[in-house]
Length: 184
Image 1 (cartoon, helix red, strand yellow):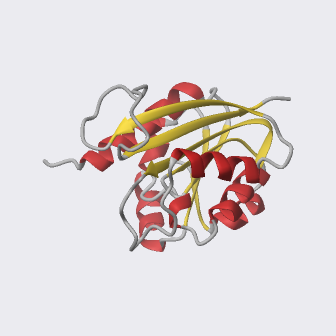
Image 2 (tube, one colour):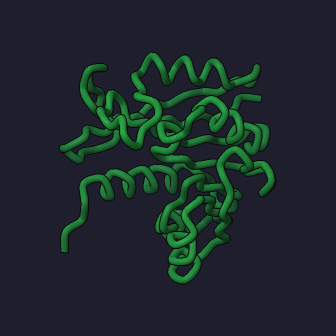
């Protein structure tokens, strides 16, 4: 059986989330896809959000949790969450700032946001924004709205799958996963 390196990287991000998010937390997985992330977050109340109806039908049949079809910009309609996950999503939006602001609006005070960005990715067909470390920093500054977050950064190489905590140069195509914990 072939498993795509992209899938392996996504699974590693969900494993990180499973290690960091406290048991009993209410978690929103924004752009959850087929819902397999719920199997790595079984200690939490899992809510998946995606636009693709076919993958949501699959998720409902094969995974536990609740799954909704809504755009990220309407995430707060589902309530407030202790933690929000959104892996490699914002680059697909016409306005990443609007998407990130909507996620932060759905995050409970003191909550945790786990979000990932492909850095320097050449896809201009499906990606609306090509992120660099500087543009990620700018996006965060634009969207925090006075809230204070601690930040942990994890880098994954695009080809070699190793431990998540791997520093690379800015020019290397990698995935940056941020863990943002609101400081009250």
